[in-house]
Length: 370
Image 1 (cartoon, rainbow, N blue to C red):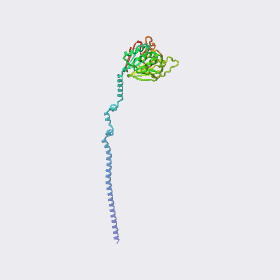
Image 2: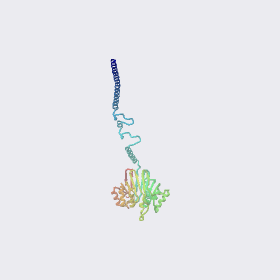
Image 3: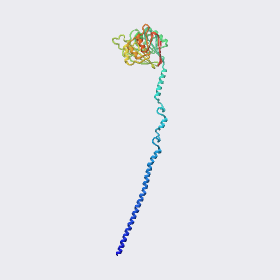
Image 4: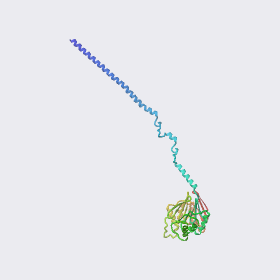
């Protein structure tokens, strides 16, 4: 019995050992299985890592294939530096249609100015030898302007002179002021040749010569224009400006003040400037200098037949004329001080006492003859 029990116990122990072995084997088998699955996952992870590594390595490789940014293909909207160089710098590139460069514009402007100079009709200034009295004839482009008509006895002489020069009508007649040695012959002239327009200062004259001029103008249907402000008009290609005094008020001490009421006439042709001053004296000359209107000129008609005064010297110094013309006579010549002052200022002095004066301008050059 005891033996059976021992055998049973031994058998149980063997069974237990066997069960333990089986369990161990199962356990070992399960671990192997788990270990095998991990082995399978490890290559997959390795493959994934390898793939990611390859992907990371492909990007630099792709960039190398495409080139550095400077070497990459230029977008369609822009041009490569090489293409820009081929087309040239902005100064070399073709100028857009309808646009001219500043150089071309300057060249065109200079060309137009030269063409205008070449196309200008010449201006001729004539001062006849008529004594100590004012009479000037200007002709340009078929038009004629007369400034002053000397003395009453000179009226017929002026008409003959105009006929000799081929003048058939006076487009503009300017009477600078109403002294007899400037307007005395005007009535005869207006009666003897067609006159289209008459300009006079805006003060009332007196005497039979003044009345004759007014009546002659009325008979041909012209009302003399009495100037209170500057006016401009054309004489052929020349631009004419006529300036009245700032005021026609006569000061208390100015019995002979009408010389200072003289109309000042400026004629410009191209670069040439001619100025006619009537009989302006010290006060009007000073006022004119202060006005800022005084400019350099080529020809200056010296006022009051060459009578010297200090403001006149200042005026000549500012205007610096190339030619100074004086309406005088052998009997009553211009003052020596005036002539020497003009010469000291570089002006060529031309006096009607020495004969007829002819000056021709072309807009750039001037020629004088006496």
